[in-house]
Length: 439
Image (tube, rainbow, N blue to C red; front, top):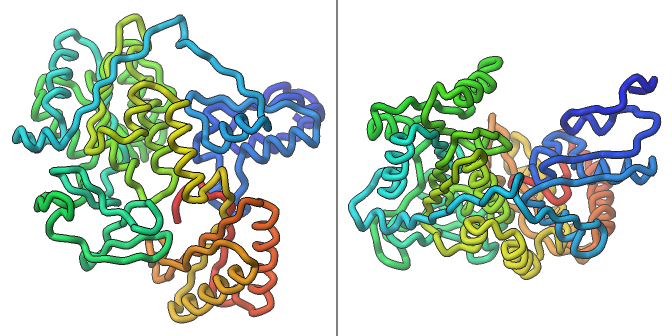
């Protein structure tokens, strides 16, 4: 590339550092993907890196997505980016018909299976027509939030508008501010005893499908079935060749795949991402559901999508069902503005871990005080999503301000304080701006 022998480089984040002598164009496809943010230090984001390099070299940047990130669309609305819209599907194909199934009603009908009555009927019809279906489980079945199965009420933090996470000893904890309460025996809204976390994973879903439809050929695609080399490609190739009728999987089955004979997509437990302990939960849910719906009807046959949820009226689910990004954005940006979250405000996360809990608590409390004296909005310190891993205690501080440069100065000052007090001898301390994932 440096010697001019290549004209195009295709790759992940690291492709941005290709030493082209005359770089003129950078294209970032699916720019909303959280994987464009590095999980290791330095925690650079591919979008920001691409734009900075383009400025240095006089190049253009194209960001492509059917569900743009809030940051990218916000900047387009503010006039920083040029917004170009594609108003129609490829070859003018119609969008799939989307049904939203209220799983609270399924419980009233006596159906306690992970598949709704409507989805089971649709699967039956799909198999009769010799067409294919995809069943998407919206996360790997981790019970990250607690909700009522009768009315759909989710236990949320009264201070941060994110769901509380269940810990040992029936504790419900907010990982943003540290708020803690006890898991109730009955729903505080409707008094139902059916309260808990969704625990079904892809393996259980596969077993349910095989029991309900013994004649169906079922493939499963998740972290467990794709550990071996080339297993990812083998599963997709087998499904594409018609060797299976139903593909059950996690997020990896709904991203960009094009199967002409898939006419039905079922989304199981849309709430698993909707009520994650993360301020981006609504955005992630909209993106996932829209991407999932886009897998149906990509060939000549019309598509159908069934979304199962305990929150059928939530704007993320309603707008995803209509494929209406603009309505979603307007609703979401109002909440982000009210709660002072990115992209309207900027956020700096201070993450620290160490074996000595008392020392960790003391240092994080002191750092929070240093930040408060800089006239910044400080939340925490609080326990991280996983408070202890491999005997390392973990805590976070969230710092907010409208001005990114002010947060950069705050980070530099905190690093000086850390070095001055020899903090890194006993603690690992990392900084992250506008995190893509919760800590």
